[in-house]
Length: 225
Image (tube, rainbow, N blue to C red):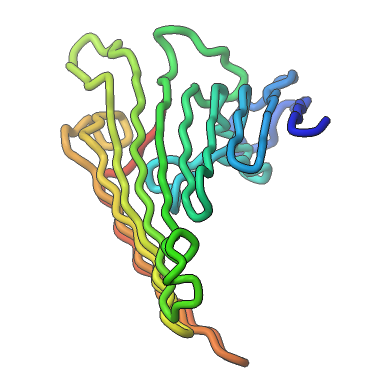
């Protein structure tokens, strides 16, 4: 239908076998979406999957073999105003089995992401031996504090910066993220900021490829439960 597309997905689960969460059982239409997309802009309402950078501060996906689906139900805007520049914005709530969202229940997710490819933006770097891409993300989750004994932050932000550098046959990618303190049952309700770091390096030539990765995470569980 030209620039417009839409769709839905029907799911039905019998009582799960051992090892799967019993809350998977149910049936319905958990995924409905509509998108209007042109060469420079894309607008989506309904359910969608999205990832910012390496996914340190935002990653929604589906994995059938694990019975996992945390898609966002809301609005997404993607803009490509000029070649080499990608801007994204998302707003919505994440899927939690078959539970309907209510005002004082699951959190609301808001996020922005920007990416700049220097080789596409600057004509002088089009045929350069060096390739460079920079990106940054900011995500916030709002969740009402219903804990009677602890004062929990209702707005928790997370921020990340990343780069991708290619030099000849070598390529290096890295991303660093920081999360504001987010006490939860997962971290035993500690008031401590979280940090995450990823660094990868690779070398590729005819008949040979090498790849190495380093990861470090500290208190980076970030869920809009």
